[in-house]
Image 1 (cartoon, helix red, strand yellow):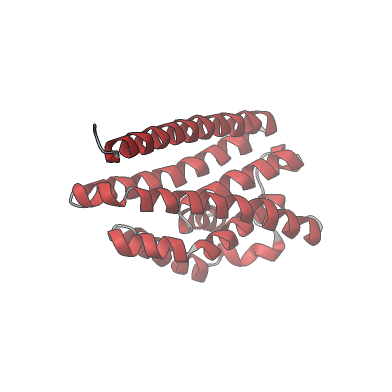
Image 2 (tube, rainbow, N blue to C red):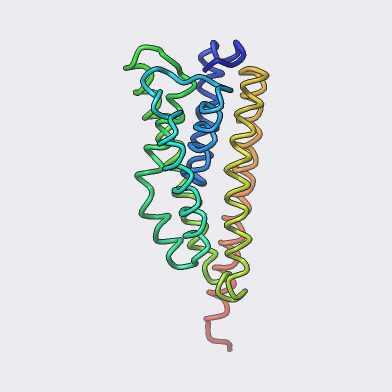
Length: 214
């Protein structure tokens, strides 16, 4: 990538790719379209083996795919099914996005790391958001679909947020990137821990309510 020398640092490149992969885990096409637009406008350069990402044809395909993905996710039942079925695509997107900042290194290093780290991160994030989407299905029905609209907007914003964080890491280097990842990991840990506690409490209360009273 023709960006600041921070991406010459392997750790910074990995962090940038990881953040882009997280973005793809939330919304597959958004970070791909962002990278395509940046490359198409010559803001960044792509590795030779990914030069096809900055073509006009790819731009049109990704723009249409992004619109379709966004619209489909506003359909409650269909959106959840499509999101679950698209898990392999999330892996592919995460792999490609991790490969971009790694640059023209040894192809074995580039694609092995991209598949394991980038593809894995995108897949796990995608599965997590798919599960949350399914879990919030009843709330969406009770709100007449309004909850789902808010959730879909939140997903788009979250995907853009990860892209923005990757840009910050590009400009500042691996130390800030590491702090960003640590903060994100801490937030996820706290949210998951609270969710588990609330779920356990709800399960106990439901079990207690089902017991016959004396």
